Picture 1 (spheres, rainbow, N blue to C red):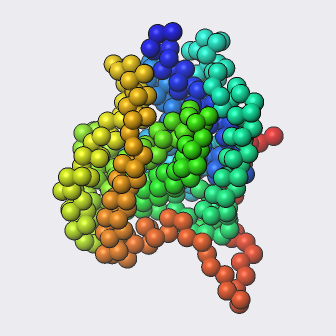
Picture 2 (tube, one colour):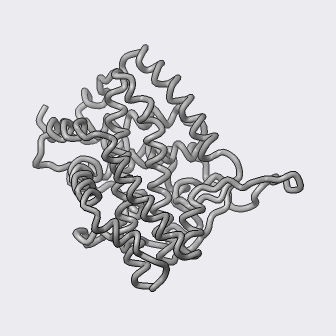
Picture 3 (cartoon, rainbow, N blue to C red):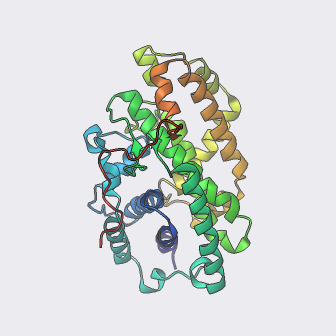
Length: 343
């Protein structure tokens, strides 16, 4: 198998793994979190085969990865309605056109070894149930594109600061979610393939959080980050962001992770053999990613706290509504999302 075929098979393999994890998910929000990885890998697959699959989910991918935004597309949180089982199925159908039959059933332990699969299923189901209790369940104020359950309050706004934090909060939620699984699954060597793909997710969203703060000036499609918006609108205090921008350790980490993200996660570099890309990913200590995230979120927290208009968007990324003895929340009326799967 030549390197191009190996790269197509790798992306398809990851999509199959995540689709299997979707079958373990306790609710539609978690299914959509996992499905976003399939969307990103399908877009990389498109670039390899030189054919763009006609789907609106590309707009979701572009917006969450800090590319040019179409505000009207997300008004009313339509993004969640776009990510559905039928859409993801069509992405698989597209990829299969360009794969040999032998590549459509990859022989990896997590899918082909019954004992490994059963352990994975049991562990992942427990982890997803716990994640759901800790981060999704109950009545909340949640401002991210992919978490819309009908039991939450969202701010619907198209201004630049709101858009910045919709992206930031979405990537932060997806980062925490992938970390939730990775930190447990990597302890078992039989889960090597799935943790490799989870590591790609962690890096993708770590870099995207940084890109939500500082515009990626090398990409002509990138949109302004929080730093540029605060300067342009003369709002808040950017001191913490100025300090981070001059932090040598941060910049070194960002450049290293951005290189992996560009060559092997957001896209697939056709000039580097797949084996080398995998080796580079595997050799990267996950602690470096966590260090980058801590630096970004600490600086963002300080910048946000300098102005209430920024703080309310940062602080309501996922806030559970508290109940007291006099107040019992029965329901939050509003739009209900389209189910991920419709019979």
